[in-house]
Amino acid sequence: LKVENKPLYTVYEVMAILDCSLSKAYKIIQEMNAELKQRGYYIVAGKVNSQFFREKFKLSEVEVNTMIDIEVVKEKVKEIRSKSNANK
Image 1 (spheres, one colour):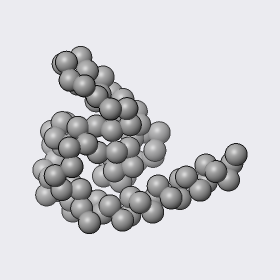
Image 2: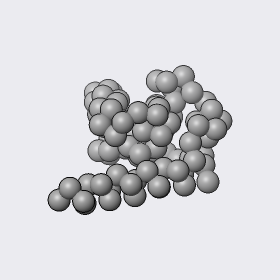
Image 3: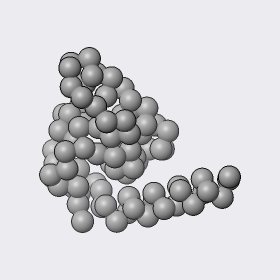
Image 4: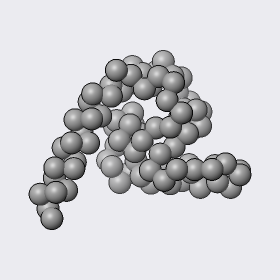
């Protein structure tokens, strides 16, 4: 499965696309959403407009789809959540 035609990328997808940490992905999304909000767009916390994201990083949808696989993202999410629950 790929991220084709998704209007919003989640923090986990951003993390996978950029190969960065979860906290860095959140920071990038927060910065991008602040810019979008300033332009008058509605935003969703923890998600970013996929077209805007690709434009900012100069990526095509095809490039993003070669960089990310939803199944890999789902596994990373499970891993992060299990670590988080273990720390509680």
